[in-house]
Length: 248
Ligand code: ADP
Ligand code: MG
Image (cartoon, rainbow, N blue to C red; front, side, top):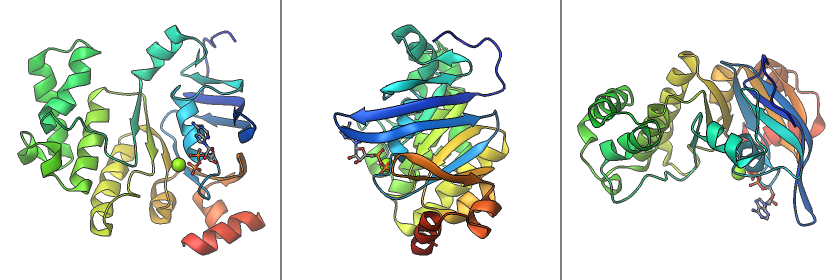
């Protein structure tokens, strides 16, 4: 239960299980992630991928076992508050604040949580918008942007907090096909800059190209894991083969 003072892992999921009443969603999952890793999670719908991701930033509490983030156990309100500001999350549905301009969406958390000055938050926000190719949309409202553009803003907003890790839950699943590429390109760029990332996705091209490790989650367990080459080209488990035959 104690914090770990020194650990090589940024995210240390230690034998967690999660049940919703009598539905056992995660079953004794252990997953250790070092800084700068890009871990891609694949698997069928309902297998527990989102729940696993949500346990990593304290949005869900495991029924048993512990998640450590940067050595801090996510088992008290105090610790959760410390960690939540260090982990960015990008969801399937762009959850920008609808009543705020793009730039205000990005400036809000750094000013409120990190106590960054308005000027600095603005300067940093504009830089991030430039990075995601949307500098000219700074004063637009989210509803004036396409889904892909909104998702790029969501990534910029997450980066504005200078998080230690970014979690993505099917960030391109709700996008029109022609928007997917732009979002994946930005994720790739962020990965190349050394961000620690955990990405739930059905984009196998991204998994192969950017993933340092691929996990196949099935029925609440990590059934198979390895390098992209191991999982895609030398698949061991029948269930993984079956899943890949449907998505590739
Ligand atoms: P995936 O992301 O792989 O599709 P999820 O982690 O979202 O899977 O869900 C796994 C299972 O847990 C599903 O059967 C889902 O209905 C159930 N589940 C997820 N969240 C809750 C919740 N808050 N309450 C009850 N059941 C849930
Ligand atoms: Mg999910």
